[in-house]
Image: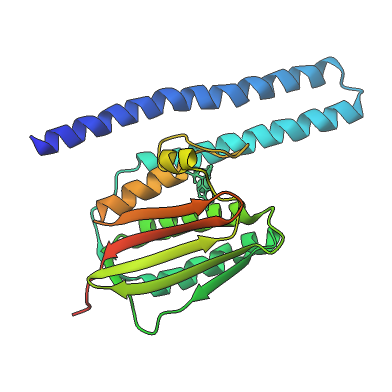
Length: 231
Ligand code: ADP
Ligand code: MG
C-alpha cells in the first residue's frame, strides 16, 4: 500500500511537470517567432535587428536551460549506488565551478576533511546535486561586494554532514518554506527545478536537507547523509 501511494504521487507530479513544461517552452517560442517576424518586416534596421536577435538568443538559452533541468528531473534515478567519497567529489565539483565563481567575483573555498567521508549514492547524481547547490550559492553572492561560498564536511555520529554556506542575498521565511517546490524561482532566468531535483536525489539516498538563512546576510544549507564506513 505504501509503495502504491508513493508511485501515485510521483505520477501526479510528472503529469503536472509535463503540462507546465509545454507552457514554459511555448512562451519563449512565441516571443522568438514574433521577433523574427519584426526583423522580416524591417530588415534594413540594423539596430533593431541586433536588439531582437539578442532578446531571441536569451529566450532560446532559457528554453535550453529549462529542457536540460527537466530531463534531469524526469530521468529515473539510477538504481546503481556505490560507496563514494564526498571529499573527493567536492574537489572535482569545485574545479568545475571555479570559472563560474570567478566570473561572478565570488571566492569558492573548500575546507578539506582529513579522512574520506564515504556515503552510499550514485556518483553522477550526487555531483549534479553539488553543482546545483554551489551554483545557487554563487548566484546568491553575485551582487555581494566580497562574495564568498564555503564548502565544508564533518562526520557527526553516524552521519556525513556537508555544509554549503554563502554570504549572499539570503531568503525570508516565505522563500525558505517554498524551497524544493517545483518551479519556485526568484531569478529572472531561473527554472526552479534545481532544488526539486536535488531534494529528490538526496531523499532517495536516505539523506536530508536543512537550511538557515537571513535576508542580506546569507544562507547555510546542511545536507546530511548516513555515513558508510569503508570495509
Ligand atoms: P533556480 O536556481 O533556477 O532559481 P533552484 O531550484 O536552484 O532554481 O532554486 C530555487 C530558488 O531557491 C532560487 O530561485 C532562490 O530564490 C532560492 N535559493 C536557493 N539557494 C539559495 C541561496 N544559496 N541563497 C539565496 N536563495 C537561494
Ligand atoms: Mg538553481
